[in-house]
Amino acid sequence: HDTQESQSRGILIVIEGLDRSGKSSQCQKLHDHLVGNGGQARYVKFPDRTTPTGKMINSYLTGSVEQDDHSIHLLFSANRWEAIKGIGRDISNGINVIIDRYSFSGAVYSAAKGNPELSLDWAWYPEIGLLKPDLLLFLDISPEEAAKRGNYGDERYETEKMQARVRTLFKELFARIDDLDVWLVDAGRAIDVVSQDIFAAIAKVSSDGPLTESLGK
Ligand code: T5A
Ligand code: NA
Image (cartoon, rainbow, N blue to C red; front, side, top):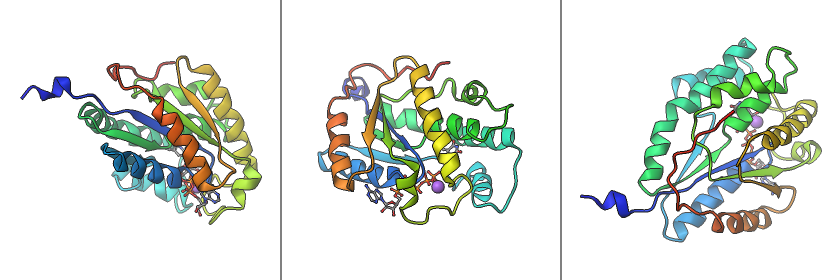
């Protein structure tokens, strides 16, 4: 078999945003849209709470366990590193991978805590070398609007003050990274209106080149 060489690769799409911006709803819709068009797709969510690192993260987020700020930060990163080879393999096998939160959340939430030892630079470092997305969609919503949505406030970072800092830092981080295709999507609109914008963005992504690029400094 040398069909591998003629088969085109999948694309790597990342959806980021504040808590309750609608990431999971949109990832699911995008997954169904791609499969409905005859493609293959896989939906990956970080943190993946099912693995050993993910279980530790879950205990921290739900408030049952405390963690040192550096330590929990590195656990979130480890939770991505342990999954990345599998994601790369799927992409080379022609599967489109949709990721719900990624390195950008990783850096920004830790830096937003206000601990002077966790600068955005420090927080970004463990992400260097992970696969770079072909497209990054940022679901933009005001913290006030997000707070009106279901179950807000259940987890550790769900305060309006924290979310406001997170929103500013996301934009700061996007501006710093070279060659990153970022689409800002107004996520304060109805679910189906938001997904139409997302489908339009996806239609423009090309998977012509090899997926060899990784996240840099
Ligand atoms: N974190 C994460 C880190 O600190 N470091 C890291 O490295 C990573 C990966 C958990 C926390 O971990 C932090 C960030 C987070 O604080 P999570 O598990 O992704 O991360 O948790 P959330 O972001 O809170 O995920 P949610 O599921 O709560 O939010 P979503 O996915 O953005 O929103 P969704 O689609 O589930 O929708 C939430 C509600 O709003 C409604 C939905 O029906 C649902 O009820 N909704 C809408 N309502 C009106 N209009 C729309 N357009 C709507 N879209 C959705
Ligand atoms: Na949350």
